[in-house]
Length: 541
Image 1 (cartoon, rainbow, N blue to C red):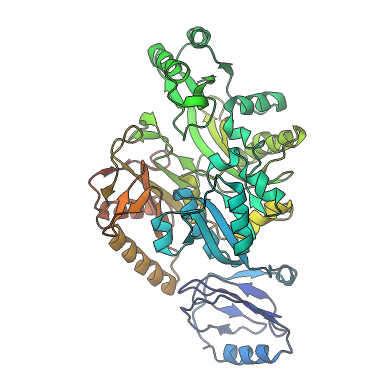
Image 2 (image 1 turned 90 degrees about the horizontal axis):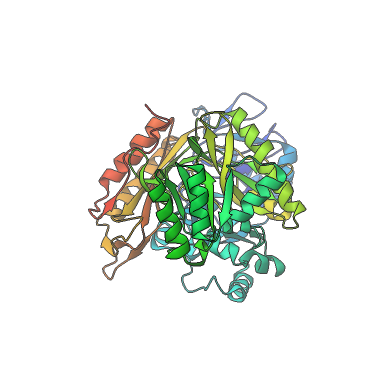
């Protein structure tokens, strides 16, 4: 059996198996070599075409004979590539034959990274993104659909049926909490993302805390309040530092780490009296302050089973040295050295899997990505759960997606089908870092519609470098993921959000990834933007 699958521009993906070969093989680079039963090296034809079809045919087929003739013309004596990923014959027989159309819901940096990874998935025919953003569209990582109302589940269902969508990936938390996955799954459209009931893990911190206490999941001591006076009395009893959180969704800004009583009282009043977060802040959680190092841990969940993703570490505070107010995240890196194999095992056994089991027993099975925000306590050296998110983190998603080597679409589809039991994921050994560029004033009132003057030119240079690296078989990448951009009447990129760009780089180690990311940041001409200059400081000297 032989299969020729599609490839991205300047990238070849080929699976070939014939009787004279001992193993089938797959690869995602334009030049590679294989070893057959004799110690000879073969080098396939370089190709920059985008093939959008797959061909499967038997060993006796004329098409195979023709292909074999071409294969035999490949030059011998080529240098051996280190990029081969061998798969067993049994795995080859199970290779996906379906060519998926995938719809990504959302339009931020996380969704851009998901589109990037899905486009590289060998089982994907095309990627659609709604509403998307100009950066996603211009990069060619997806076709953006701006006029689809994602709050109208009937419209989304109709669109999916018209376009033959075989998988929907919901990026942001708001449509998940609103029940979009419920409606799509009921309509028979496989959707990666939890139901509204299961999304309460993020939608209500009180719900999450009660689940932790019921199922023995380690977390900080807490109390929930709706009355400001009672909350302040509890704060006075506990002392400072202390943490005050809005119960509902607050775009990553509903947490105050109060170092003084006045700061704590002000946080309570802002949420319960002034209503700065609306209904999301009508209840507050007052939580024990945990001293240690934060880390992010992700797991894919199919309702009963969970498999871990790689670790990452976010930087929540707006200023260098972890100063200033909390944000949605100013940068991240992966892997996080503090998440050792022992810590990873503890997280899975004591936090992630008990949560999956608890949600199932509560009658709201969780299907999606379970994102645990953790504190590795200084005192014990063990992790405690700070919060759950029910979607890929932003900006952690960016560093995870550039390191993922497995077919993302098939992994997400397996989660939707409850088939994660026999699945594992492959990751690049490289490190990755993302530096977020934000509009001045963020996370408060920030400048809008400012022109990012040379962004398109910088991205063109990065694309040329990426193509050159692929030709040289160098695993090096710098990618700008768009989070809050639009275009003006002149076609220039403008900043329309708080967090605007995620400059993401890979390297053989974290230092190389950091250097490449910051070198690219410095090339972007945007006086009205700013960024932290110390992303990765905990892991680097």
